[in-house]
Length: 103
Image (cartoon, rainbow, N blue to C red; front, top):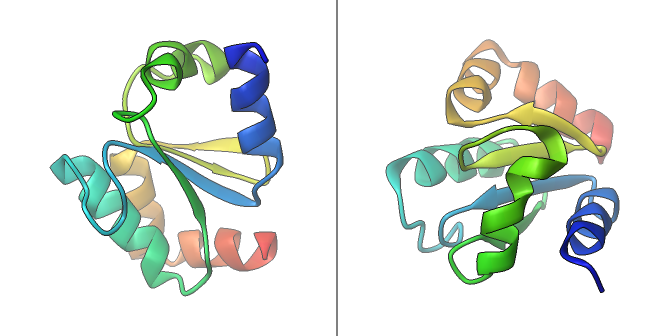
């Protein structure tokens, strides 16, 4: 399967998915740590992809939505954004609403 097909299937197959460096239990950068904690605090399960463990995804995800950095959060197939946007949405309560609507 082509890498873009794999990325598309991951995004479309999960209501909430975070592409991050590391895992929620063992994040490998501060931005991924903050983002995964914010999503987890919303109380719903979410999928994640460790881009450090999958170099093809890491090298090609930016082509999917023209977003150059990690982490990247997708909800219901739409790019929400990176760490700064995730944290702004979390602090305003909007992230909770998006996650709840996706569940």
